[in-house]
Length: 141
Image (cartoon, rainbow, N blue to C red; front, top):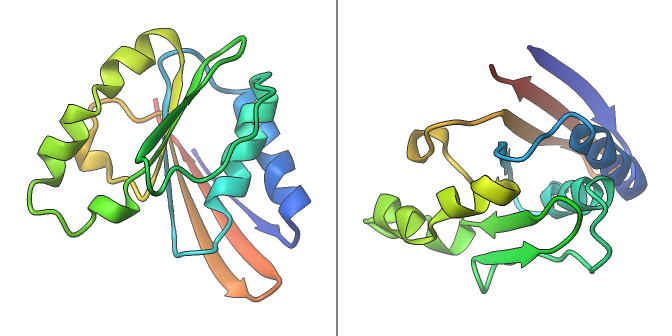
């Protein structure tokens, strides 16, 4: 099922994340697509809030993955720095995200569903103007 919506503020993006979190369960994998500054990390902050995570969520660009502890653990992955690697599939498998999916939810920025077996949701964020984003949610299975 595909749903699209317009977002005009960071707060709205975070609120969308909270709404998404309400539909997620342990074992779900979410892929986020969108150019730099589209609002991917703001969406993850909202997902984290919706999962009851109290710690600050920021982009894991330089560390690749951060694990956040809460009632439902969240692993936040950012593959941006790995996009030019020739062995990206090896890099992704080295993250051992399957283990994180056993106890929590995984959200991957700059992800490609060809590297993952079970994707619950793909979110595409398009910058339509400096103040507006078009967000398309593609719910699977």
